[in-house]
Amino acid sequence: MPSVYDNLELLPQDLQGWNGNSDVFGELILRVKPKIIIEIGTWKGQSAITMATFIKLNKMDSKIYCVDTWLGALEFIDDNSPERDLMKKNGYPQVYYQFLSNVVHNNVQDIIIPFPMTSEIASKYFKKKGIVADLIYIDGSHEEEDVYRNLCDYFFLIDEGVMFGDDLTWQNMEYTIQKFCKNFSRRYYTLENNFWVIEKTI
Image 1: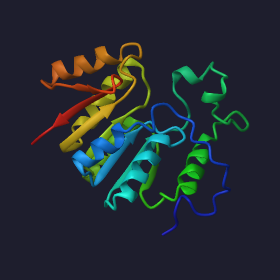
Image 2: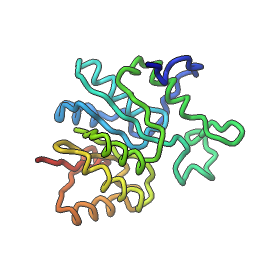
Image 3: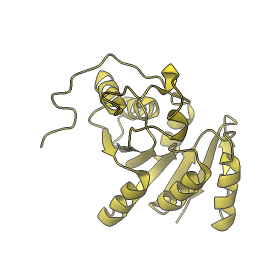
């Protein structure tokens, strides 16, 4: 079966990202020992590659679904800074190919499965196919309504495991996490003063 990584015009590695190399990823993987990880919001793949490299080093049998449109979040539209460069060609973002290249450079294409679509449609697909995750990383759009929708859509794709994210101090992020926990009788805790974690048990 053809792979999305086949015949790729490889770009030089560029793993620029935000918080994607934190020790939190390895800590949670060791704790949960996930078979399936879902990441919402991948960008150039820094966090996914951090997790995949940890998985490979520890000889674990895990797969990571990376869900992203690779079209950028709201704050990218008028931001022309290098760290939010969507690599547009004829007006259309090409950063997806940078992500694929980074995965190949780090030799983790056997672990990382790109899922180029919206988080909402992806959640419906996972539910339809019976794909259940043990560890879910939420780092997509940081708009309040988008964060809350992702929390609701993806928490219920876990039977037993952990949902987590970062940027706790970003705008209304903590308020949104608190709102979700209140509405669904859950609790969250923090790691490194920036990551939030919600555990789910059967």
